[in-house]
Image 1: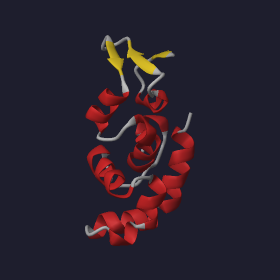
Image 2: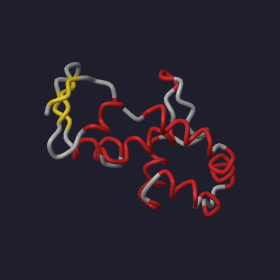
Image 3: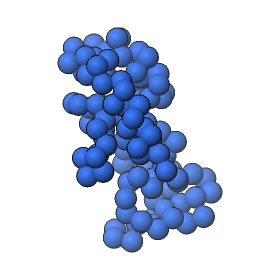
Length: 115
């Protein structure tokens, strides 16, 4: 299957049988390319976007969590649910407070970014 588009939301659809073609950059997006670009595979793109949010799509995410931090958290705990369940173990105080205090926003964000 080939998905044509340049929106990162579509990267959650990429897998061993589905590739994405970015017509703007004239680039083939494979699972490896998603991981190289975002630090997580396509199977975690929904969770990454739930943490980071997307202002252009009105997705709140968790304040102060960008793609690099989201990838680190997902690498450590494996899923959005596990990140939120272990938020009290995050050593950076403000990040810990944001994860604990914005749990519902992160869960809502996951629903909003899921295709």
